[in-house]
Image 1 (cartoon, rainbow, N blue to C red):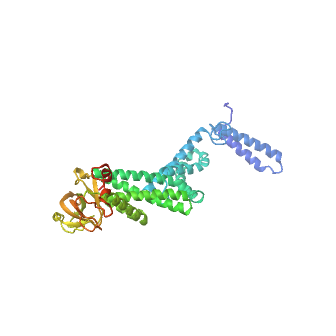
Image 2: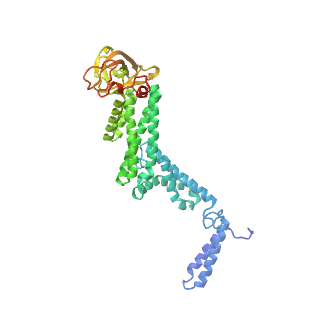
Image 3: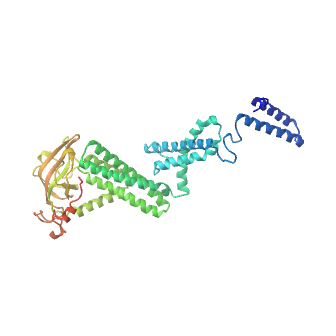
Length: 423
């Protein structure tokens, strides 16, 4: 720039002088006013060039380009602020601090909604004075938080909410159910504290999924979305059924069974939970009522400070005097080929006894535990509930099953009937 070019201060002073002159010229003198307005515009253009800015506040935007590279970078930062806001909202939702966040919203939904909401403010933010970057970034985080509510509002007024959030709820439920089943299998092999804690944690997550699915099902029903209702109802039933199964299978691991029972009672719809437990019991009876293995080891309950808990038999006295007692089963219980081994590893299930069955204790086994003792016993099935008399050796244990309907224990059919590992 030439040395005789006016400075920025001189240009500003000149502009102010021209504006003062313009204010003194009558509105009717359009020619003179137009000439001075041209001088003002030329001086302002020269001032902008001198200060290194343009009409859109950036000198690095080429002609005809909607945004400069610099502005695009700032917009990305703003979108990141919105995504951060969405992430914060998700974390607070998981911690149950904020209840306004949609229950079925996953982390992707929260972050995406936050970035989208921040994008709505980009036009304003990208053109804001460069000295206000930090306030703008904070503003974009607030936009991210508000974006979640905007998405939820759109979901309930424009689109079916289930279409947006249910897929995440379905996928999360499947993941949690699989994780819980795996953890329960591991705790049956070894009841180390970390395995028990993992099983309980995964059962809690299944409970959260049941809550999410139930809310999504309610929304889908109110919106008349029959296809979504079908899918959600199926997933909700499967998740509830998995808890009923875990409760029954984990009966001899009280901490896990209690957790499954607690989640079923608190988070699953009562009718659905009751139906799931009935179906699981019916399936167990269908599998084991005709099995000929009449003798094995089963869990009788826990005993601490003179009191029984989680009992499967009608016995109130000291467990040390169980030997030779004939007892009635009060809760379904698996029968195993061996008592628990090291680290409370459970034996294979070979049969199951049901409410009303009569058994005789052959050999009690007391297993010390930090919260008391777990009482097991080798028992023999004397009579199935509803049977007219005691079971004779070699006879079928099912009143409706003919002898030739039950395969021998070592035959392929018998092996299929023996079942998987469970308490």
